[in-house]
Amino acid sequence: MSYTIAMVKQLECEIFGRVQMVMFRDFVRRQSVKLGLSGFVQNTEAESVKVLAQGEEAKLNQLLTYLRKGPALAKVERISETWSEPKQIFDNFEIIYRNLFDRL
Image (cartoon, rainbow, N blue to C red):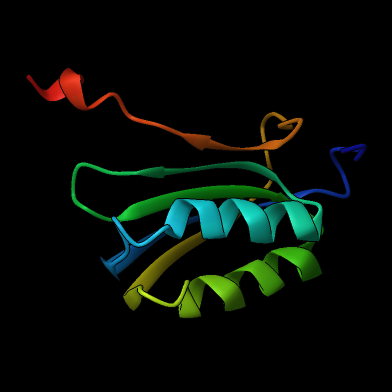
């Protein structure tokens, strides 16, 4: 992605409901890449999904619309969202995989 920091907005979301084990992270990554956004998505210990996305505000609002619906097997109950100016710019959009053995 080639943005200047002035063009970029940042959206941080936490999505609650049936959002793990339903391909939610893959769904978020695919939608984000289509929209030309950068950032990451990851599962949380609280069984929610965290998204940090950067890009043009209109594209981030489109992503937010997708997040409210989620993939076919998901059931989104609520989303917390925080908008800000980014402190750093990400180059791409990634899924962060948590090592399940970290909990042992």
